[in-house]
Length: 114
Image 1: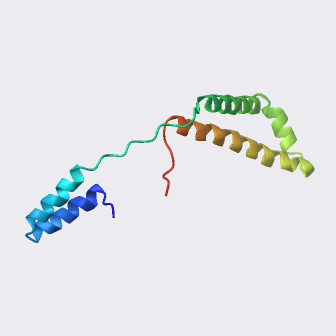
Image 2 (image 1 turned 60 degrees about the vertical axis):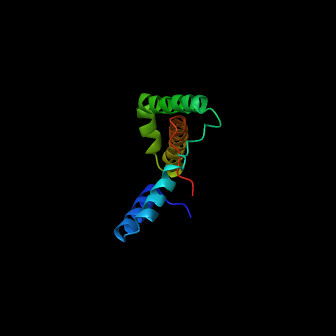
Image 3 (image 1 turned 90 degrees about the vertical axis):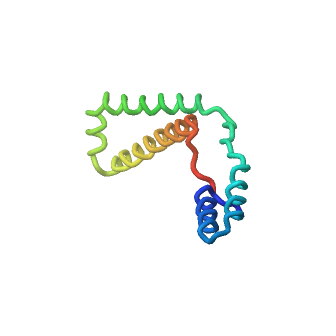
């Protein structure tokens, strides 16, 4: 069983309070010999996809605001045009999500693996 630093300190404290100072010293000494794990080096470059998806995201927002009159007219027609806002939301979500994912990976922020 591996113990984290808090568990090790609390276990040593418990033994020390019980009068078993030798055991407490041994627990504390064993924890000092453990090496800290270093973060693994990134396996691939996230720079190019981050830049590409970032540029695409900016382009989508520029197009949306530049042609906002057409967008408003088309999206409010009703009927089959009702799908346009939904499809646009999916496209914006995918592009922005891909950019954000690559940005976080580029910065070295990864999800905790269980």
